[in-house]
Length: 144
Image (cartoon, rainbow, N blue to C red; front, side, top):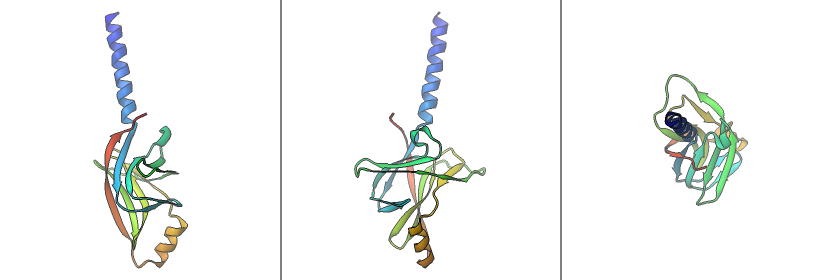
């Protein structure tokens, strides 16, 4: 009976650990206003979840201090042998206007991107150049 209890506790501990690992989020300090799909998001500290509501590929940006939240379905990118060891959020910059471009979670070979909005496509046609801005994302465990 004692061994059965230890086995049960061990299995529960593994399930909790696996569940917590699956709920990783990135926290990124974004010092500028940016476009996410058709929304303009204020500068702030964002929790970025690539598996929002336990749906792989559903991306959420949440800023609790500025009370901003947005969701979008991502398009997978990457998938090669290179697996990032650190998280990052990437933006396209046209002058003083920023657009969300990519998100990368540590330990995953695939990142996520969104299709470009009409506004970004128009700026891309008229802008002399685009620059990429990469911000680090710290891994946090989501509270459920």
